[in-house]
Length: 353
Image (cartoon, rainbow, N blue to C red; front, side, top):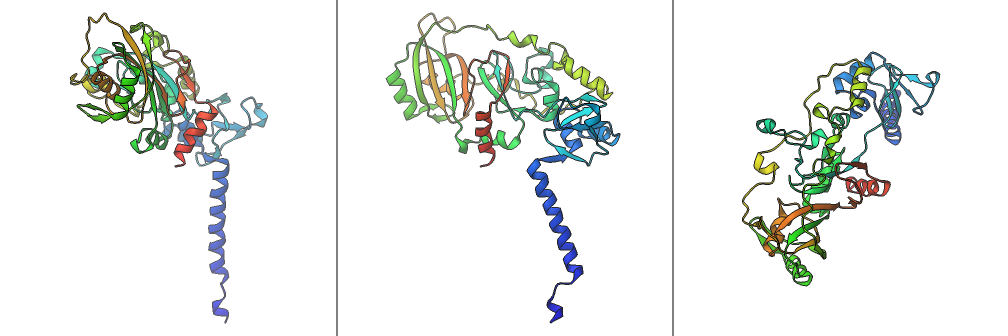
């Protein structure tokens, strides 16, 4: 019966549909993306600005950053797609490459873990993360993974991927966080191990930790290094020479969209000031100190400080050494580094879960 056979009219749309699916699959294999999206992701400008740049045919691409002009291909509109890591040029000038997936930063003391301070505290000119991250990385969407207290130092991550950030912070993932706390008193390792393992009751609930080591300490090191990174991006808003050159190439003004991924919270939250019932310590203390290294899997507010204080050892200084598989290592105060291949592989495994 010929009525059961597929007609040419039915076959043609299926063929087209298959072709579209194949094109999408091929695009995913080489990670092709629209040029205006790629430019915005690299912090060249807003999506509307990069759309206009591509529309004006001012963008060329090549297989390598040092390709001569005759080996570059001009793109003819914002809908054209390029590989994510392609070498791109604006009016013949090489543009920045793709931003890293993860950055590690050694946060100094007295820096807010927000990208912009609350407007009502602007007159205090408090340092925050939005002043230390390159403007182009902020525009690309990089954001801090969680927060460290105002008076806590150490490792804080910046992520380009929202899903990765969620996986790193979600309690169900149990991503480990390792700290070293300088505490008052000579801590007994065996006693403290048992207390932390059993769980310590605080005003915020019962929390557990794994003790790594207890060693004698000379006490707090003070505020050395707290403002060491002030030398980075000293001009207003963290604007560096590179950003000024980029804006000059693009032919745009100095105005920027205020689209930072995080806003500053209330003073008490952002500076870590709350009820101190769990954290009483003696300001005029002159006794011995200990350094306590421990690992937690939760991220409750000032949890480490509360736990150790309720074990009889108030914290005078706290530094984060590790988050998951990413370690602070010898990264200097106020400096950044990109995640290495092993760390990126671990991060990718979280995204794929």
